[in-house]
Image (tube, rainbow, N blue to C red; front, side, top):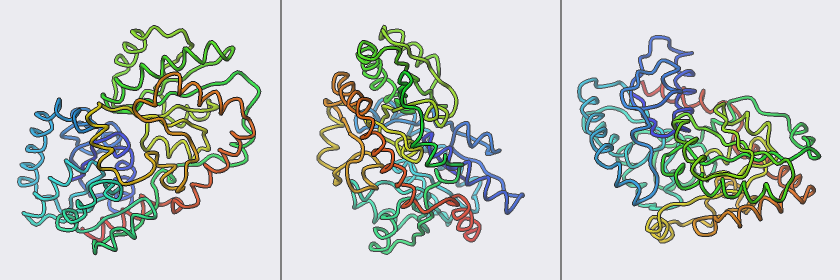
Length: 369
């Protein structure tokens, strides 16, 4: 059984399933996931669209559905008694499932760690009791778990498993044509609702400043395209905004810069050497609770891994259309600074362990089986 509760986990889980099946064709997979896991033959019993949510207060709206699906998955564990439970990120749900699995003797592999090093570090004790092995994707996570005596392997980042653009192509990309800006609002419903309006307003401001500027709004697989179209229409944009339903890598290839909701997509952008402005908005209560609990200086994965601010972050009230437009303008107007940002971004590849993460996790999973 495999459980991925978000779009990025769905993609990484699909790569893992494929790597495991390359070694053992007889494996059967079922669980929680989305279109990527379905595409590789996993029998998806609960779709991620029912579960994806972020923020302390935002979760309450979906709590009845989440609790019902959690109960369903626990019942399924008892009935199926899978030989291995693979959990991918999605900690509040997955750690509950892990506890149920341990009670009935099902081994648990956790792939892509909860960010316990950033907030609520005491959760590592629960992880140690409920998880048999951690497969972590960020270099500093291995040291963290070893210090807490949790079995762990650093496997590298699965984003490097797909083909990467040549660094010289990135640094020699177009700079003289009309700018194209990517808008990456996120893949959860709450992210879509909070981020698209401010992104559309930002686009309107920039359209008055830059002639022929164009915007590509990325449509995540877990989101209904009609929902994006409806929100954009209601915002009455005075800008050229095209909704793009292809993979986000295609957006990177067409853009000079992206405005991205904090998350895995910012690391994808960094790997592609894509200049960016990171934003994030949640409810006021979620924000203040988060400020009290978070123990790191940056929210963006790019800046966290680099240990410094490579790209600007605009969080909560700072993520206004005026502020975002100003940061985008600074980067667009400073060609030399943009090139320097690109060079620093592509260096992130060097600390992510190289390609082969999915294969390394598959080796661990098959050994546990």
